[in-house]
Image (cartoon, rainbow, N blue to C red; front, top):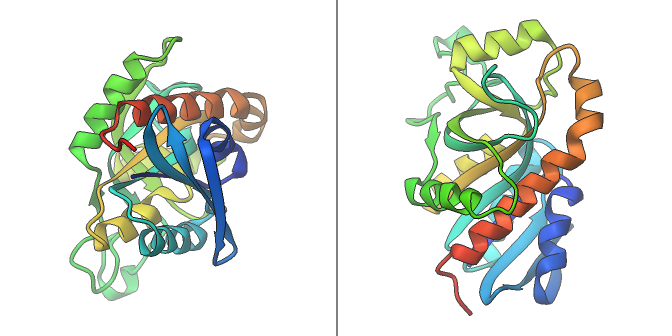
Length: 234
């Protein structure tokens, strides 16, 4: 069974609406909706914004559903000039950019006393997502690269350039690395799929308002296309 996590209801509402015979249950205050799409089983849930909400949701999901993989779908700000609004980014790996244990000798993003701070996405899922994007009725540009996560909405050219230089990130958002962290510890394959809503610079707030809907629609379309190709048959 594929699992889809979005931070906001808008990011999973389209998936929920497409499911046949949906059944919703509440766990830890979160609404999990299980159903099928074109004969493929999945569960979709809104986690809430930020790393704590994302981590809690991912663990609850894994504890209560027999999921084969975890896919985080949603929107992000671009850090790379080659990645434009409406484009899709498939995560190769992810890191928490706001973890700072520098006072104890740790590098930026390095989680103290852990042997791993960078979490690689599943290559098989990434391949499926590339192929799913090619099946979309409208052309969407797809990129693959590092997704950086922190409890901050990035809307500063200086901060954007710092994240790009330090972590070589392709886009930035607020949940992916937390979901990846929990999935990795539970040995569940994961993928972060992000549609670009803004350029994470001084115009980010204005861009986000204007292009949020387009980005979410692209993200949902790719998620459903990916699910329809999956091996998770009823």
